[in-house]
Image 1: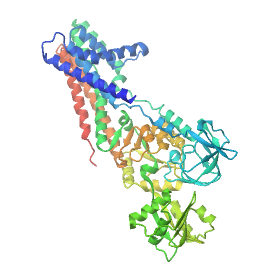
Image 2: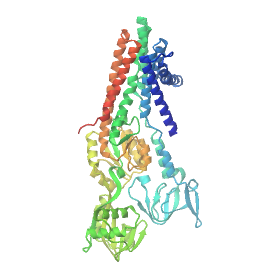
Image 3: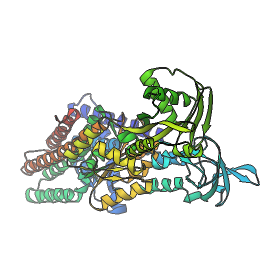
Image 4: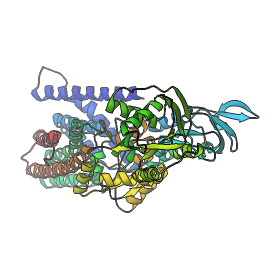
Length: 619
């Protein structure tokens, strides 16, 4: 399919170049040709226009700009004004090609979601494991999920403890600890250990399949903006035909009537929007912004609210050490961090890796290697470092091992949790000796970006799958006034629909697979290109290639500038057309000169639009 699209585009460009050459040869009468070379432009560029106009009229009685162009083409040919016909056909073909380049290409986001669906599931029957197709899993079946495997259906854990990567569904940056009685969802990934689960929602009812349906349906209500020339086509055709008929009736000169049809052809109108949008897209590209949808800038200029995802969008999406507290007088912060980093050295858990990375970044190589190491799935680790038997993990691990938790440490951990941190407790049995808090860190330019958006008169909201404490902390740090926490994909979708139903077109900014439905449903979707998933990028209208959210205010201002440019283009082209009509009625313009005059209007539109390429508002 992609090859077919590329071949079609190459053929269109070849035809346009061939037509341009034929017009130059015909205008300057180069060579002694028996047939006017302008016929090449008429056949290559004009035939599709006439065919499209006839099909639209016959099948749907749809009057577009092509109808007037077809009438002008045929009338020019009838009276022998071949160059005028070829020039009009060529300009319209160029406009159509530019429009083609600015519309969306076929996207493969849904197919990528489908590929996330596990093909098989491990069913346990009478103590024996059996691999079966995932679609054959029945409610009540017992499934076994090994480390690294993707959960096939929704269900509840019957046996085992683990951590599950739920970023597909919730966008949470950290794996979630699970134990017996906890729910797990299809499409999520088991990080450690093995667990057995009871299937509860299978087939089309599973979480991943519901998300696929959301992505498929979310785009249905997003109407594409109709080209301005086609929107006004009925009036343009009626006025042009009426003026031409009245002139012929009053003067008896058909050549004046044909000239009116030629100069009234909406070439500049057709070029007004796509040239400005393409220049706007070119401007955006200079700042690491890829505009994937042709009308995205037009829609962005109408946005009243921007909704941000948290993880990977306003934040980096990776845990980082933010607090270290030792309550052992013999251990300073550095010594405590060294012990924990050594304990976590062999851990594959993101929190453990973050602690090791923090020590290495701050102090260099670790001084000690663990003498023993044990991964406690869903709890933490147990290790021996320099003869000291240490535990590093969550509150459940401390409770299991009957570790004494001093009030001072509990108070510190509660404060950290209120700031949205995840707490790792460190114990040397039977007593806790400290804690390390980790959290997702805010991008340094996030607060400045949000402030600039507010200054532009656009409201903001945070839509995140994270828990309320983490969401509120990040929102307060970034300057976001509205927060919606614990959002699943369908919840984000509901929030966006509610805003848009209330008359607030929403721009959604996100990065994860779980953001794909919201990106599609929003009036405009912006995806993070560097850290973002392919599925989120495929669902978006605009991609921040380098994840630079500070360019969003420029993008907003650029969309508004692009719309102003389009309106000026339209006003100027209409003014030129009416002036040319007046000259045509009085006989000052011939069809050929009229074609050149109206061609000059098209060139003026292109030049004015090109000024957008290097535009940037000085702060």
